[in-house]
Image (cartoon, rainbow over all chains, first blue to last red; front, side):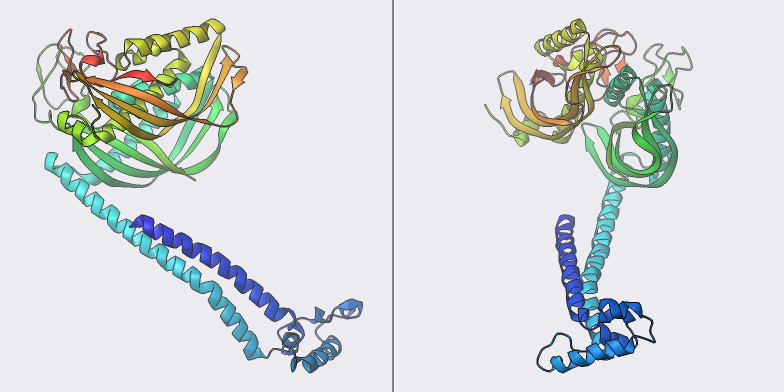
Length: 310
Length: 181
């Protein structure tokens, strides 16, 4: 549906551009020989007669003789030939109105198309968001969409700061293991080149839930975030920008989060000491202080794809 | 015998096409990054011995020449499953993908450009083959370390966070048996 809309809009845009050209050309040709007449009717300026003589006295008061001279000669031709005929005020207005109509109509249609397409996309998004929320609530009845999106934005900022400072282990618990491994390798590459990816000045723009699915006991949520931030590469230890620039950019990321629903209601036991752990948020066993790896119990980021930057 | 994706899903209930493609992308990137930084032990658990030996040889060769093979700003797209084969004891998936990167060699230390392409991303279609044993044990996201029995939630590192045992993914999941590199 959206794709079809996009095609129609593209066609309309091309049509609008072509008609703008045609209309401009039409105006140009229609008015090019009529400037004296418009001057006469009070619209034009005095430069229309051409030649050195007219340009030397081109004030509004002094032009009448030359323009009237020329217009009278052109008006004498107008009966046999269209070009050079004086246009009346009404005709001039009509020319502008027709040209304006030709130019504006396709643009208005395009704008209307945009508005319709936007509302269709928004409606689809809302429908997807509602369906996703319903699916999530089947497994997590107390799921709060807004709270989730807010929390994940905070986590996103933490991840970016950790990435910038080469301290991914600070956010390991927020990432799936495969993503953590990949980002670690990417950071190693940056370090190898003596570069640093600066990410700062985050500003939240928007966030939405766009989908959810369940596979192999894992619930995966797809979200769409728009944030503003500065994102550029510098030579490590210096402030010299190598790639990108320091301006604030709008970044659109598709982020996927996963949680295992199979083990949600299981009683947690520390794998090291065997004690039962309840409401643990620190990832450290309160009995033996072992680090707990609880990826399946918490939302972890599994994928982050940048789909737009401006 | 060739089978379709739907037939594979019927035979292997844990298979999901989207998850598989996501895995292909992730593992492919990890391999190339591991070659750049020379730490291929990170990817040992999801490639078979033959692929690992080839990658090790490449890394050793680069080290001997004192060069680094950079795949800068890597990107994987257009992942296609071209063929699925069912054999007596395993499933084989042949896939292809479009790999884009600034692909060049630089000298270690001063990072001086030696050869390759640093001006634009080269695009190459790469072939990759995965194999999964039919006897692979199903454990979803929660795995038990075969050595100490503790839960291994860190999914694809192949290392138990408690006893640090590296386990071979071949007994559990898809492993790469061929790779265009």
